[in-house]
Image (cartoon, rainbow, N blue to C red):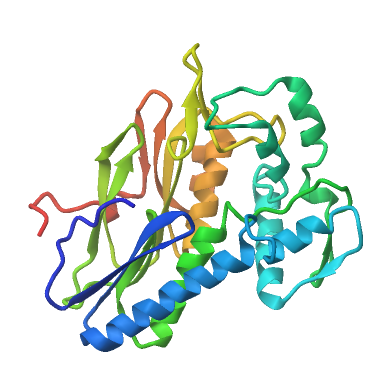
Amino acid sequence: MPPTVSPPRAAEMRLHFDAMASRNEIVVAGMAQAPARAAAQAAADEVRRIEAKYSRYRADSVVSRINASAGGDALAVDAETAGLLDFSARLFEASGGLFDVTSGPLRRAWDFRAGRVPAEAELAPLRALVGWDGVEWDGHALRLPRAGMELDFGGIGKEYAADRAQAVLLEAGARHGFVNLAGDLRLLGPDADGTPWAFAIQHPRDADAACAQVRLSHGALATSGDYERFFVTPEGRRCCHILDPRTGQPVAHWQSISVIAPSCAAAGALATIGMLLGPEALPFLRAQGAAFLAVDSLGHVHPHDIDSHLPDPRPLP
């Protein structure tokens, strides 16, 4: 969770909580402490609800039920899940098939704790289980046609949860603050005095350093990078958890990509697609009208339209 550069103020309520295997924070300003805390707790409960509903680690989750039905009959889904599936379909098309929520089987070949690179003979049969274009989805019911296929919302779940938490806060009357889910941010609005919030974008090679600081009042900021789960081979190859569904191999062109967008789901998806696109990422992100900051494999920083979000030269408050 990247640090908030702006220090806490007396009129702010900050709630820290654990969910989605991360330490998270909700900040509400400009409200009395009791209603602010109640609103933040409701937002945290919403994050945990989404985690329980879509976690692939829970046997009773929607995702687990869908995966258990792979190779069998179609499974009807509720409206919320249908919305996520429609969004996933749009991302698949927009990315040329690179953002694929059926790429979960590839994880079976990669053990990031053991630090072992799988052989091609292990990856080939798993790649045959990947492909959203083979999924049968009619807007109401979904069928994974081959046994062993998996659905995994890991690429958009946390970002969707941040957006939902923001919606819960707005419904409770909060208008100033932000949701921070392990560095994925959704803004409620500026601080109570009208000033934007200041955030640090984590340096992808130094957890205690920032490669940039940005000021935001609205919208969202999300980062995708090769430093979350990875290992380095004896030959010096860095293998991260972001896998190209076409090859089953980790991406390698970018250390990290941070995107500013109207919603956290959009920002996170664009950042991940950028990581998957490799050298084609920058023109793609520009075409989407996104503001971003990308760090390439050599550590060079590539900013685009992010200047308006950078701090003023004066010292931060």
